[in-house]
Amino acid sequence: MSEQLLFSVTEGIARITLNRPERMNAFTFEMIDAWTAALQQCRTDDAIKVVLLTGAGSAFCSGGDIVEMGDRLQHTPEQRKKVEELAEVLGDQTLGHQKGVFERVKEFFQ
Image (tube, rainbow, N blue to C red; front, top):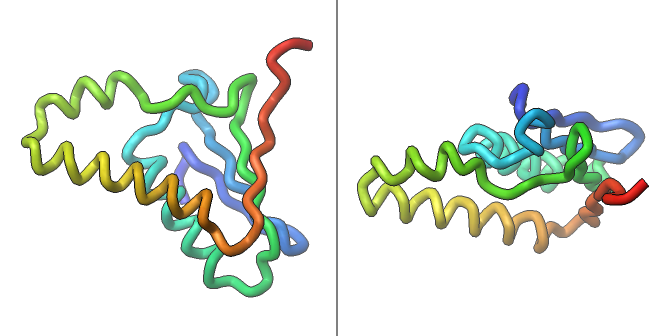
């Protein structure tokens, strides 16, 4: 998939791992593309029964990467709209996935 998003399947369980622990797994465009591709594979592979979503390091996900958000200001309004639509589709694909999607959120306080 991508160094920023790891994907594996073991015994019917697909694991999607956000892999930017140094940035608290903040989303990048690369991660969104890889996540969408992973969900598509989960949707079409009958051997996958459930999807586990997790983040590397101490955080699940801190949201969008603000550096990339700032870079987006350089884009045309049409390009920015496309990125916003892509992020919305990703959320819909994750929440509306026909197979169970479970998030493994780490404990805040230990």
